[in-house]
Image (tube, rainbow, N blue to C red; front, top):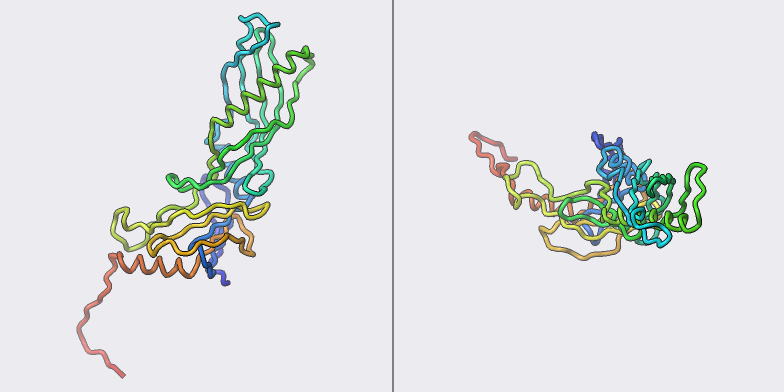
Length: 277
């Protein structure tokens, strides 16, 4: 195993992250990308700052409580996520993401404010169309609901408020379907190549797995020379925000694809004498 390159990436959207590139001997996937928990959280913070993930949700909710007149059963709510979502744990095939939100509910003249904490259980997936890693929302669990101020609610109202908050937050987060995390990789443009999609290096998605409590791993294949034999993904011994493992097979596929299609001249005519010893 030999290290080819250690570098940093600086983009307006992300903080500086450390990228490690290694040439390894893989018997399966041509490229294996390891994405750390820290990088996932940096991405979530950036998406929160740019409002790619909405911070506020507003709407109406209708109660079904016989003790309240029908004209007062329509409630208004506002959910305000106070901070960025944060990856809390990576377990088996699920990622646990924490959230904290402020909730305001209007029941006629009654205004209720509360703080809510909970987790979103997600499954990491690779979006082939957008070439990015995403977290598909599987389940939303509320851990704590705290009513603010000195307001004392009747028992049936406490139950109703809890149901509203649980249902509204679960519905709004689930409606997101997925949480975009970061661009990963797509078809690559090589230097000295003709223009057109057929001349982009065809990189195909293989698999995505949570390999340990701190790392998500994505496997890719270069389809130029066939699919090859797939094996289980294993983590390298190196740690970084992103670790890129490249197989010897991938190097050969890239050079073969480039040599077959490149516009770079393969012959160089010359005149003169050249001594041959």
